[in-house]
Structure formats: C-alpha cells, structure tokens
Amino acid sequence: MKKTSSQLRQLSNPLLFLLFLTAAAAAAMAAEPEKEAAPAAQETAVHIVYVDRPEDADPEEFHLRTLTPVLGSEQKARDAVLYHYKTAASGFSAKLTPQQVEDLKEQPGVLQVVPSQTYQLHGPGGSGTRQGTTRTLGLM
Image (cartoon, one colour):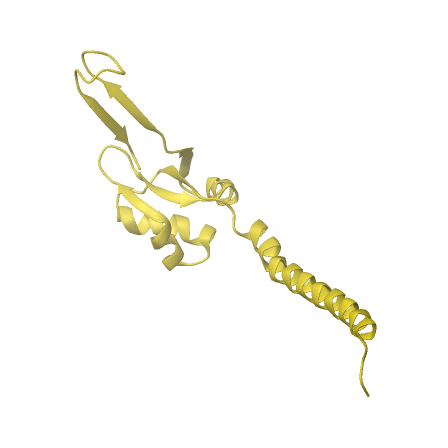
C-alpha cells in the first residue's frame, strides 16, 4: 500500500507533536531533582565560633566535639573547620549554613557565633592611591 504525500503529512504532524511532548516531559523530569536538592543544600558562609573551653581540654578536640552534633559526624566537622584559635581566643572558624549557626549557638560551651569579616587597613597616602601600604586582615 502506497501512501500519498497528504497522508504522510498527516502522519508526520502527530509524530512531531508526540516527539515534542516526549522531549518536554524528559526536560521537566531532568529539572525535577534540581528543585528538590535546592532547599537541602543551603549556602554556607565562614563563621567564627567563640567557645568557653575547659582548661584541661585539648582545643582542637573540644572544637570538634562541639561541632560534631550539629553537622552529624566528626568527619563533617573536620571538613567544615578552617582554623582553630588557641592563643588569644578560644574558638574556631568553620563553613556553616544559617541553620547550622542557629543549632551551634545552642551547644554547651558556645559563647558566640559571628560571621567572619575581612577589613582593609590603608597606610599613609589614603585609599585609592598606590602610595602607602595596604594590608588585608581577616580570620578567613
């Protein structure tokens, strides 16, 4: 049985439409996991956590013991910590989500959790000139 050109045109339009719907459905399904993952993966920022560490406790161990319940494992706590402060202050800097910051504030021994900030100090000559010195100070 031979098909005429009008029969082929009628057949190709529904096939193109079906192909278009299939592609659109596949694209929508591929985008769905991204929508579900977005709320779970919150943005992290560096925070400085000041603690009241017992004098006989090892600073790094105490910091990890404080952070582990918030992050769920000691390995995650180790991965999040960027620096341990042991001399002038007792605390640590870590990458934390807003929810983790709130949870950490409730942990025993935590005095304060503040966002890390970087300050630029300008020497003689003022800002915007090449004269003088510029130093960047920050905790992370």
